[in-house]
Amino acid sequence: MLHFFEKGQGPALLFLHGFCETGEMWRPFADSLSTQYRVLCPDLPGFGSSPITYPITCLEDVAEQLEEWMDVLQIQHPIVMGHSLGGYVALALLERMGDRIQAIGLLHSTAYEDDLEKKEMRNRVLIFLNKHGAAKFVSSFVPQLFPEHRREELADAMAHAIEDGQRSSLAGLLAYTVAMRDRVDQIAILQQFAGPKLLLAGTIDGAVKIESSRAQQKAFTHYIELEGVGHLGMIEEKEKTLAVVEDFVCEALS
Image 1: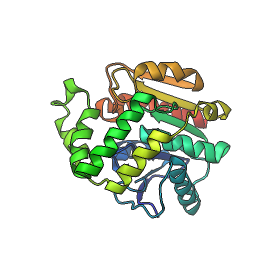
Image 2: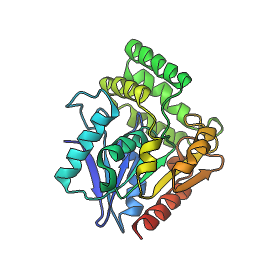
Image 3: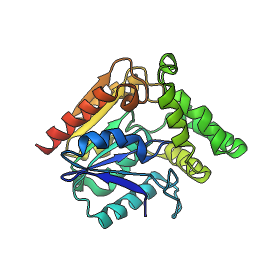
């Protein structure tokens, strides 16, 4: 069973965290949204307090576990929001569940597969992880997610993110790196889905380039750019990001 926290009652909102993150990253969003909604924030298997109990060879394996978990909790027609890796998992869930999902939101994520440069980067990550282990990788990886010019200002949030990331297992980091590298383009899955679809992008995101986000925006019903924001809008511009999510969820349920 996945470790998770939930808060509130009403329509189900499922928040999926990114690589080297846990469900705790969504705690401030859950606090705000739980006045109207049932907010659920799991640790994906291999991160935080969720162990890997079944082999993860692809993101579809993760989606299968999430669907089983939702069945146990009787989560019906959720709105699924995913950050980065969480967005890739959300897309795998959408492919699996289709119209049983009410709406989908990608935050600093992409429906495109990795390009050659990104695949090579994933391979370097695998080499680093095998050589140096999880702790050293997390300490070097997480700060890069924050915009360089704001790292001093966001030092406390960055320290918290590193501490949270240190709860990632080596097996999980290795498995998800391969799964992200080998995932396929999901634009067609999005286009087949009739529900609301959000893409939130940061104009200075170093992990998901703004040019890539703009190129796929027509596959979404809602496309929002946050000016001067990197890969972590929910931390860098929490209020703006929360407002985007609130507006999207309200419209998706209307």
